[in-house]
Amino acid sequence: MHTKKTSRPRVTALINTYNYGRFVGEAIESVLAQGLAPEEMEIVVVDDGSTDDTAAQVARFGERVRYIRKENGGQASALNVGFAEAGGEIIAMLDGDDLWKPGKIRRVLEEFERHPEVGMVYHPYTVWDPERNISADDRSFRAIHGFIPECVTHVLQYGSFGTCGMALRREAVAKVLPVPEELRIYADTFLVLVMIFVAPVAAVNECLTIYRHHGGNSTAFQQGSDDRLRRRWQCYQRGVNAARTWVAQQGHDLSQPATAAYFERHALTAEMFRFNAEGASRAELYCYLRREIALFRPIWSGRYCFYRQVLALAAFAMGYEKYVAMRGAYREGDALQALRRRVFPHQASESEKIPRMQESR
Image 1 (cartoon, rainbow, N blue to C red):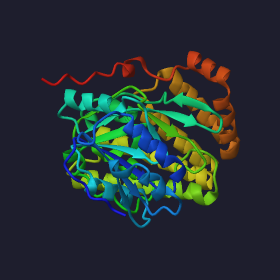
Image 2: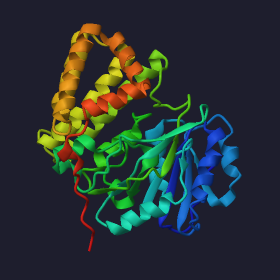
Image 3: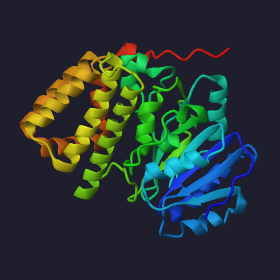
């Protein structure tokens, strides 16, 4: 089923979905609740070959939603179809199981208007676990503005968002398309990685969307089968490799300090995903933790670096499985975390003084 678009709106709300019939109606309703008229914002749903009742759920919204069904090919292929069909100057993305908070799109558009030079506006989100009825804002988010690849500390802090946390200017994202279709998951990570090399970016330090945490999330950070963990690691590694290739093809020097630090950071993330899938030797874990300290030293306090060095030695002594168990217990202990923050503060004081982007004139 493929309904035809009419006039060109200012915004495209691009929803990609696969077998989320139980959620996609709520996602669409959260977009409609933004209050923009059809001539201002179109809603495009790309269904990546769902076998559930997704089509019927979308059909409830009639002509207000343009529904595009394709054969199953993964997230990258769905996004590529969506970008090709989107008519808006601004393309704001949403996964079919997530939600926009009220006022999200107007806040994003304000930022694009304030900074006409930016190619992307991004923001953190609230993680919601409906089964346990708990939610928490992403505290790891750092609002970094401007042309990020120029600064080592900025590339080490930028990120911590995904599909539902980004909106892209059409002319900017067109420079990186198509997203490599081997990325059945982590296609959004490819966009996160490369968009900062296209144009300056702007951040909104507000949780404007809700990320629904559930057992079906393809990239949820929870225990899963070995095959699922291996798939997560391999897809993430492919995304990083594809981003490195694209950046190099655009003439950027991968050995430039900030760019090298940027890809080292994501290589370490891929390495940890490999450990999750396959385990790690004591030497591998120790080397990983030492690389992490060396990389993040510009933004970590001296006391926190010392703490991580002690942790690396403890990890070598314990081995990977015991280290993971210890870290899990630590994350569940609020008192322990509070004590660590007092004794070994994480951020170096200067790294918190992140300059705001100058207002456009």
